[in-house]
Image (cartoon, rainbow, N blue to C red; front, side, top):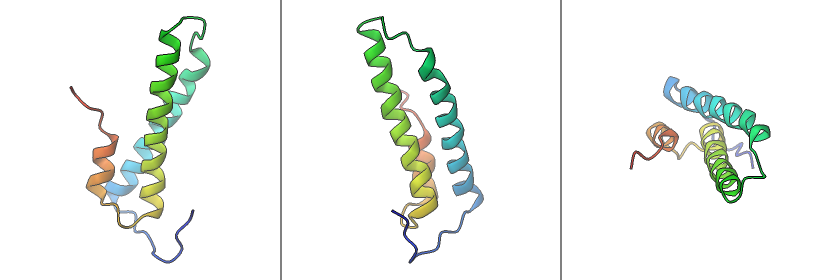
Length: 84
């Protein structure tokens, strides 16, 4: 839901995080039609992983555009995938 009470300033970092998340959403969405859903159980795991990442990225975009309480650094952190 749009929070019209608090205006959001898109700093270069915040704008970059939103754009990076949107680019990754686009790239992941282009993979969905290519998933071979006949391969079990790998396809289900792939789909579950893609769905979770898409939801996380959408959250970055929504928070970046509508939640002034979320710091730019937090948006950047959410874009990073765990290394371990």
